Every structure is written in structure tokens, then in C-alpha cells.
Image (cartoon, rainbow, N blue to C red; front, side):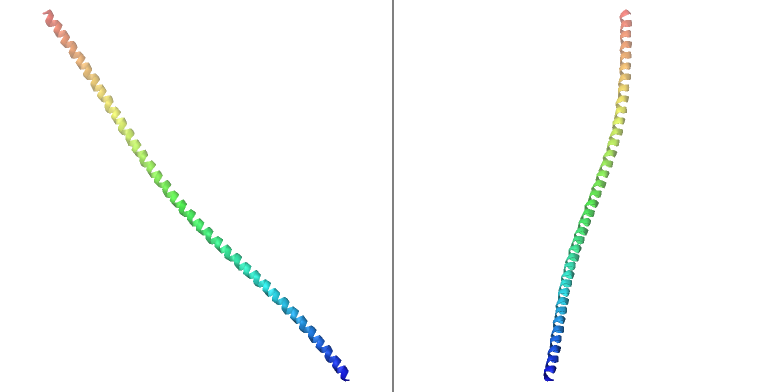
Length: 135
């Protein structure tokens, strides 16, 4: 009877050892899964951090580009104003040139008329001289 009790106790201890071993394997596997999950979470956090840095850099580039575009537009606007002012000065110069041309033409007409008067006066003087000589 004693040997049977010892045998049964031995079997119970062996079964308990097997259960403990199985539980240890399950715990070990669970710890491995937790460790792998932790690594995945860490990698995901790094990816998110890197993505955030890229988004921040892209935002800065866009902001800088926007400033460059704004400055370029200001320069183009200034150039347009300068061209417009230059065009107005050109038109004014053309008007002054046209007026000067008219004045020169009128002066030419006056000189021509004066020349005609001088020529007529010369003829009259010449005729008078001829008459005086004949007399």
C-alpha cells in the first residue's frame, strides 16, 4: 500500500512538473511575443518621428518657396512700374519731339517767307536803280 501511495505521489509530482514546464514555456513564449511587440512599437514610433521630421522639413521648404515667390512677384511688380514710367517718359519725349518738329517747320516757313521778301525787296531796289540810272 505504501508503495502504491509513493507511486501515485510520484506520478502526481511528475504531472505537476510537466504542467510547470508547460506553463514556463507558455510564459517564455508570451515574453517573446511581448518583446517583439515592444520592438514593433518602438520601430513604429521611430517611423512616426521620422515622418514628422519630413513633414516639418517639407513645411519649411514650402514656406521658404512661398517667400521666394512673394519676393519675385514684388520684383516683377516693381519692374512693371519702372517699364510703365519709362513708357510715359518715352511718350512725353515723342510729344516734345513732335512739337519741336512743328516749331522747326514753322521757323523754316518764316525763313522762306523772309527770303522771298528780301528777294522782292532786292528786285525793287534793282528796278529803282535801273530807273534812276536811266533818268
